[in-house]
Picture 1 (tube, rainbow, N blue to C red):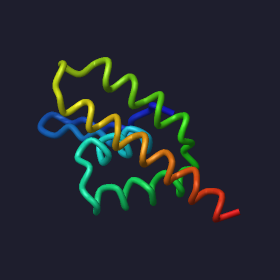
Picture 2: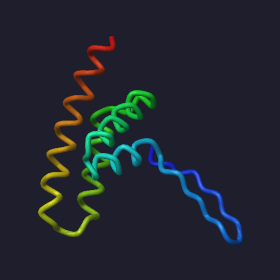
Picture 3: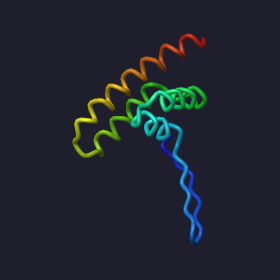
Picture 4: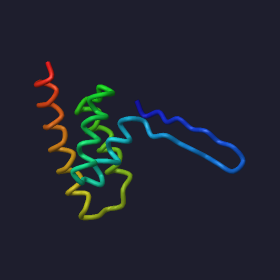
Length: 91
């Protein structure tokens, strides 16, 4: 699922994040509007909490050590719980 779409020309290069990478970027920022966006994209693209957790682990492993990473992990954990509970409610 970690595919990106890209377009290049001489003066312009555009890359579009995969849906799971977009969700991770939104969760990294962690403000309410981003969490809402992440939930919408996760539902629309049927992204599982497990996929998000795996991508978050990869992002954390590639990140320089920082105290903000603890908050990011907590945001991921809470988001995945919310995603799982909202998925059950949709059934």
